[in-house]
Length: 479
Length: 161
Ligand code: SF4
Image 1: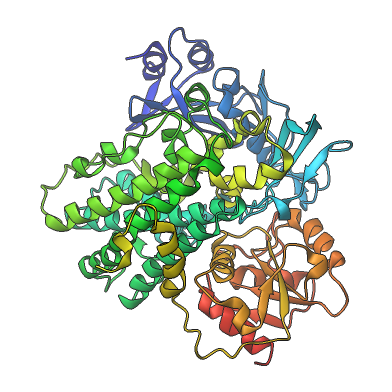
Image 2 (image 1 turned 60 degrees about the vertical axis):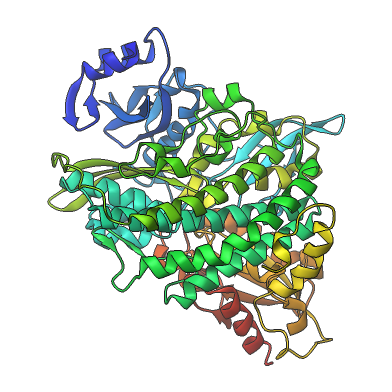
């Protein structure tokens, strides 16, 4: 166990993996000698600040109380925490002391009705302002992404430098809307958190809720969830490949990806479910009437024959993505970038590998350390291959493993799902069956802090291609 | 099994040939149109589900141009503004900027429940609750998300085709 982990475990255990620290322990955690645990998420409300960390492949939450609406900033140790700190300030008006980062607003562009809208003492709106004068701006409608994200930067000798990211334009206040609802009532909101995770987001949420309730989904539900997740992975990878291909004039590759994605959607529709797998995951399993075996078979039949040609085209056009938006292995490690982007940069994290019942032999991809657009694209295709293998392995023994033991019900749970764009985490706390507190972490958040470094040195014209290759999802970041 | 297993030097040629064969939307029932309607697409703070469906429609799996529509990259070339998303307050400026850049005779089309009235997200401290909070919207395409085919059918209906 790391020293940091030991200090956290010295706090009061309030749930399965959650320790409440006093101010001294919190400070000691941030100054702990030795290795720094990977930070997945940092968030706060008016009373407490939390960090969700990864120790090995196990989640660990540490939290502490605010003192006069201030707290010692986790970003003083975990650079990736600065986004969560800025969000907390915008929503609640709580301040991070000794924070790293530029302290720019995260979500509040100065156009909300109120400042600190979730605080017990909100102020009048229109306070925040983002200085951009004199800088080049890539406006949100031209970012190349499917959601609004704005970049401002300097151009020095034709190259981008000093990138600032305005990622809060798509903020809808979804998490706040869930408070006071039952998990079942809030599921429609979770199911529309971001379109790259129509399955993965509700799945991570339902796993968190099950843990909080002390329930363990049976092997039939577990396998159905796994299959849905793999179908979504293939569809979203194809979308991201197509969009990236279009931005480097690789129209032929894009065409084949688009057709393959459409074939998956049609296979779903022919099985009587929504084309993008919306509203299939339920807290207690899956939508009544979903026939997972014929669905899986139809999707495999639609995809399998296309793989050789997709691979060929991907390798033909790969040189156009060489050197695009390079995320080095060291950066991936420091900012705990997971998911496909992290795996293309030498980070091996894939939370599927720790799931009970996972058919590990199907996950053959070993990732890459190149970290550029070409590596990400090649890996997307390799992961589609693995998804097909995994679905077939599950079909060979569906629902057959032994039940896992149920966890102790603590009214608090953590759930995770390896979505197409990375690991999605939910933390929920229930009170009288309703949601008392909730936090979600989309993988795009882990990219935010490292994005300026990754985009540095690109030409302004290549920025849309770079952002598409990273598959950043503004709706997942801003929520 | 068919040409798809062909790899090697000729594979790109085969890929060209196969590209039209894979297309899923039926082309035969669509008479070619000359009076093109140019579309500019703007996402304003939804889950991106509708925006991704519009992307699919504008990709090569659908023969958008055969139905008399084309996507443009500059609002100055657009006839219709397709808006998706819940209209976050922070996106109003962007909408205004794009709308003003469009030439006279333009139309606003709300695609999806969010753009129409905020959908699941409604109105709140950060969202306006769809375009209806800003203006009267006569052209709407419902769904959450509407499929690419739904959007195409909706646009044909709105164009009186
Ligand atoms: S209407 Fe539905 S699918 Fe479309 S952006 Fe809103 S929540 Fe997403």
